[in-house]
Image 1 (spheres, rainbow over the protein chains, first blue to last red):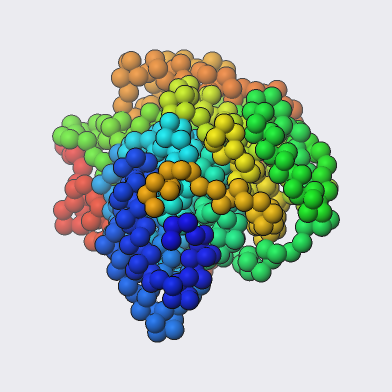
Image 2: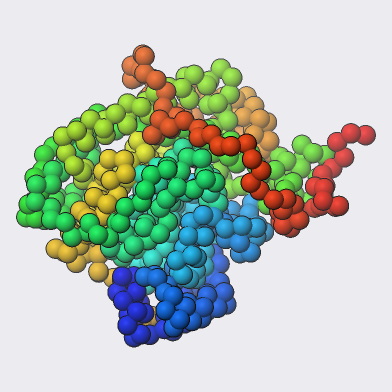
Length: 486
Length: 95
């Protein structure tokens, strides 16, 4: 069963080939056997999952099943799930049982999908390797010495290893697309505001966005259709109709205009990654697309701007963890300040502290204009680069990451880790959607082709990605690890 | 703009984050390298560019001033470290 895509599983459930209970038990068994080596889950909610599966089977028998009724999924541990631990990868929330569901979770429940559990992640979604988790690093199923990427590393590794057919992630600077690329799966970051952020633990509120991570673009199209849409409980969610993302998948690509940003093929790009991406572009040419070079002149300022804006927002968002209302509280506080400062010192890990300190510093008196205002001005220039490019081309293509997955422990210096996100971070600053699709291997590790579109162009991105997946089979390739637990 | 020990300590104080002397010097090193990278921003001319705070330039939506939530104090206090009679307990603030 695990070798099927989510779309194939939905068809098998419909035809009665197996029940949701059988399917759910199958994946739970795979998690039990294999996850000791991967560490992709923080919590596995087996009992609840089997109960939900039984309800799904009953609904199906009663003729009340939707397309994804009875499909098992996993949720990054950043989505609040009622009565289930929601840790955000942090000691701070190790004891936090969420009292409500995120809107994404409500929508998935209403669609009849089943949650197998909560996946591992970099603490508070801050990281590009999943090495910043309080619950330990996740291993990449393609090579257990390699990182799975981050921050949605657990979701990516679990899908790649066939422990779950699809998972939800969030992306603030590349946290869906980069781990999808590193683990050889398909991951979509929607337009800012397309998916409600209600109940998603906030990192950087003007950048955060949730999206699906699965085997194929078709799988992602089904899932996006469920989770997208306006939500009155998130004032930044956009009041705009949700198109049918599946209906457009088979539109032909003849006449599609592809732009290759020259800044995405420069210094620091691994030659094997470049080769795989250029091969993928050739596939598009054979499908009738035309290709031209374009420029996004402010690309190199995206990381500097991000490391002002995201930590500034984080320092504000994370001020709520004070040891009073929820989360970690230090022992025997001597006074209120001691309670705050020690609870926070004990509850947060190194990278989170670093970003809180940068954010607090850059927002503080005497530094605000030079850092924060400047970064927001540069953010507008970065967005304008994309808007200008989309005047001439339909989509942009390039690598999702300059290298394939690196080894665990290889990047000790925070700045060298930050620079990994050179091709993904500007997309969040601009608020546009992006998808990473498997496009080959480099040194035995997967390469992700990133496809970018203008605001709300998700249907087009999914169509463009799906057509590539009709012409190639990179997305169907599995690491040997997945077969070991067949 | 260089960052000094006093800046890190001020930020830690403002962020209510206890840090030891050893940690402070580690953070001075890390933050210096990060801010050195950030300082590339100063080389761009942004004269007259409006700061962008929302990627779609949206403004805050308004809604009718109506009560939409019910009181769920007990539910929300179930995850609190210490409560009594519906109140959050903290060390004594006023003697």
